[in-house]
Image (cartoon, rainbow, N blue to C red; front, side, top):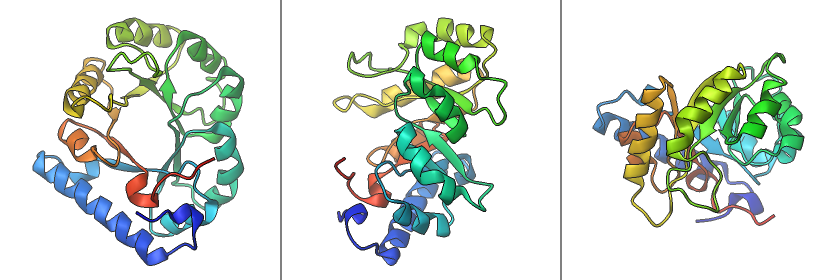
Length: 231
């Protein structure tokens, strides 16, 4: 797959990739007995240049994900201009010293994963346009990954609520060496348990499975933009 971030942008290829992903999302939703409109395509644009993102914006994509606060703060103010319907998600780890900036830049923070971060966010909850919050769940209990362990989720969700935070959804990244479906099913079950409408799960290689398990947001990068640039 060509890396569009490092070469001259080929707009017809961008459109082809987008239409293919949209078709796969529609097919997966219909196969699961769901309306395609229930699934939001979140284009993961981390490391990608503004010129390439602009192509997808012009094709109608309005939901994007970035994993670094500073990178998003540099790229997105100009890209947002005149696009009130754009929604930007933070899908990477959030350090406490970046919380204020993240609140200003993002519409959704998907990586709330610890009490110190919850307290830092709660201190800013009265800010204008405070972002929606998803709790990241470490469904595979992987020590190298961020996220609340499934068994600790009830206590952490209650803690966030006590701080005055509204939790809008859950997010997870399954282990690469295990079948994704059981992790997706677990996350969807936990979201239903807490009455949360949003379930962010599934990436380029497994989003059809995630949709079958109830994903409302699928995070697609490689299938749209090509391989991630080295930074």
